[in-house]
Image 1 (cartoon, rainbow, N blue to C red):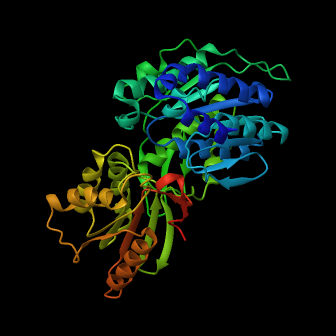
Image 2 (tube, helix red, strand yellow; image 1 turned 90 degrees about the vertical axis):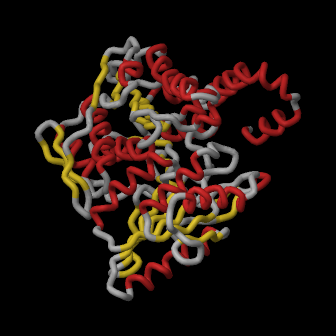
Image 3 (cartoon, helix red, strand yellow; image 1 turned 45 degrees about the vertical axis):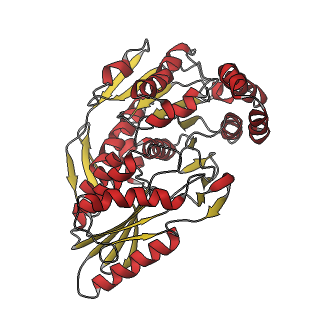
Length: 430
């Protein structure tokens, strides 16, 4: 259905599309929900939005509820789960199309799920993909300027995020089969400068979550929630905060602190999110989705726990057709933080991939002492770039140095998108 609609859109004049776009998106969302019987009306629906952390928070909530005995499905940038199985998201969409989303919600319901966690994006909201999903609880992880090229301005980006919470307040409160009423709830990042805007909606419960005090180690992070220490097998202060948001959702859903602790501590890792690969006793690789400057800054704040003597960073230039301004910034950041940098392909779509690489490279060499062929390279083929970086790391480690290889931009994605919609199979972790 989605493919047919894409063909129809291509056949229509652009002036028609601009006029027809809002009712078009709204109608599609209604038809998708109608086709699959409005499945969200019979489950507890938790939406997660924000600039970063969405995928991790979705996974944490779903795992925590499942460990507590509540059968739960989820949709995210990284993975899907329908209550019976989990699989990687190969659709190249953070929030999938309306028909797929309603279909998987229906499958969750048929599989006996009592809850569903839905990663909900600003671009999805603009296209009304959230409509006819009856959310009961929404999580705000935080916001900062991002996706400006697609939205036009930060205010438009923020307005799209806010619409999810307005939608939450508009939809009816559900009564579940046993007679339980789940009050409409907002769980929000209380440390974010826009926190007040995101809780300023007429819902029954508003829960603010602040960043907890964190203990760090090479194995993970720990923090205290309601007097109980939670030990995560995940790296990064930001993951402690993600877990604190998930814990607040757990409490809102009626879980005990012991159940929350058990669920969060059962998570050994999240695909493509600071995913650790041991290459040799002295070489470790981290695969992470970080594709913009703030996420890269957080990544570098995290990797200090490894005590690496040398860092090699393999990165692309964000995706084709979006946010060009951040490309040289990403290059400059990598050049300032890493001992060696390899700039490669990511998802060029219809742009010239070499031109994107050159923009990142220009930022890397502009204010650094890095010299091409010595400690910075341009390698078009991403798989070759990764192999080259790993070989360099092994060479460095032969002298006794501990080397960390950062591979960023794609996480657990399984393809590279190039011209005319073609997808080239690729996985940074393989």
